[in-house]
Each structure stands twice: as C-alpha cells, then as structure tokens.
Image (cartoon, rainbow, N blue to C red):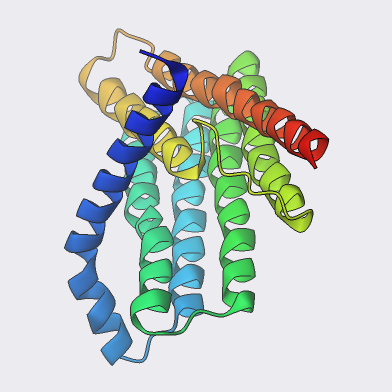
Length: 230
C-alpha cells in the first residue's frame, strides 16, 4: 500500500471515529448551550480538570518517594485526565452548534491545550523523578518538547499562509497514548506488584517523544517544500 493510501485510510478512520464521538457528546453540547455555557467556559473547565489530574500524579510521586504504594492515586490521575480531555472536543462543538465561533476563542483553546499538555507531562515527569527514574523523566521531557513543537510549527506555518495539519502524532493521538499509558501503569501496579509498571509509562512517553518530534520535523519539511513551490 502506498504512503498516500495509508494517510488517506488513517484520515478516514480518524474522521469516522471523531464523528462517532460527536454523536455521543452532542446531547451534552446542546444542554450546555441551553444553560448558557460558552465555549471558553468549557475550555477553562477542561484545563482545571487537567490540572487536577496532574496534581494526582504529583501526589502519587510524593507517595512513591515515601515508599508508599502510589498506583491507586496515579490511576485516578489518569482517569481524571481522560475524562476532562473530552472537554477539548466539547468546546469546539459548543462553538459550532451554538454559533459562538470567535477568533479569540480559537486562540484561547489552542493556548489552553498547550497548558494541558504541559501540566500532564510535567506531572508524569515529576512522578518518574520521585520514583528514581531519571531516564524516564528525560524521555517525558522530550515528549513535551515534541508536543509543543508540533503545535508551534503549525501555528507558524499558518501565519505564513501555509496549511500544515499533516503528521501522525497530533494532539488527539498524544492524549490517547498518554492517558492509556498512565491508566495502564496504575492498574498494572495494583494488580501485578512484582512487575515494574513504570516501564509501561516510559514506553508510552517514548512513543510520544519519537513520533511527536518526527511529526514536527515532517511539518517543517512540508513547509519547506511549500515555500519552494511558491
């Protein structure tokens, strides 16, 4: 199968999954609109939830540093993060269905998305440091760099009138990999005490680190080609 066919299939699958999620959340979106909830309010609630999830991971790190079992707290941190990640889709739908799309709202959403990622991966890095896994914390930091650069390259490209949405490890994929890694780590730690569950977490962070940075450089190359064609 050609690369373009793979990209087309991946995009089609992603769009179908997104439309399916919209069908589930639209009743809640319409309820928010009737209640007078604005997209920016939804975005802010999402950020506060992400901060709470990160706080649970910091708490788990503190417990680990004291020699106590951190995995129950760590699991709850992952659950909170994935629940409030839904608000990342809710705010856009509230804006669209409620006819409340604004340029400031788009910017506010993008900025708070970056804050969400910094809090989440920062919480993971702190937890790993407290567990004595410096390498895992460095890998997480590289994942954070890649995540921010994926978004920055797109924003810079769009400022130059270049569409730049390509790449595998975009925000939805990063959220899924991170939250699945966090929850799987917590559950494994509770159910299999003889196995080091942090390996799962570090592997998830490594996936983000590798593919997010590849996506960032792929976008840079895409922009280079687009500029040469003009």
